[in-house]
Image (cartoon, rainbow, N blue to C red; front, side):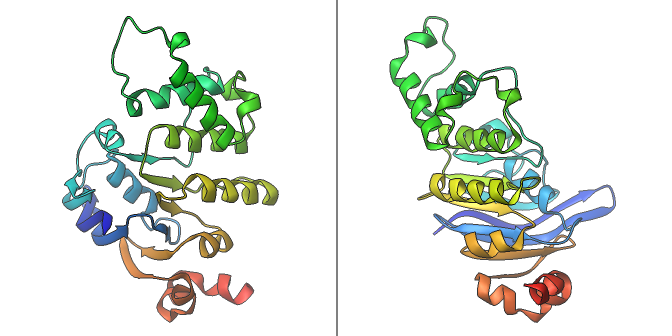
Length: 250
């Protein structure tokens, strides 16, 4: 059963078509990668799904509910979380506070003037549990803005998990990392998305083919193929459009 369904989605900026009648279904629990050359519309597609951009036409359903053109915070509260190409955390808060903020809504905390956060032991314990999952428990009181790049990316993943997200969208999660950092991040992504749905935009084809259950190839705002990794690798149309050099050098 699809957790996310896009039907004939189009996005124009003025007279320029960026996303052109795109349709896509992502199954619950699936690890789905979206690949394509620079300028294909991958980040724009993420912005449309997460509510940052409004669609020009078409529909986007998350858990059978139409979400196109909803505010990002409403979509997030339904259980969809995303990362950006540029790290998006609260740099002046410490690591623990970033995670605790993400837990508020998923744990039923609403706007309240009489709850002292320091006394909410269940909330604080859960925050520490998330930090342990992402390997940052020993950095709990460390200023988030002073973490290394890979650790900031791990914190972003922790925020997504703490929010209670069922669908996690990662935009180039290992870009700018060393090989060892990237491998560690991939293992973390595997661990924290177990039992959840993952949609990932990534340029490292080794990671894409290793992680994804299915891959969609986006070229000039249109999906030209969606299939299992081994079939995408062998698809001549995909090779011609995007993967030829990568495959022949592998």
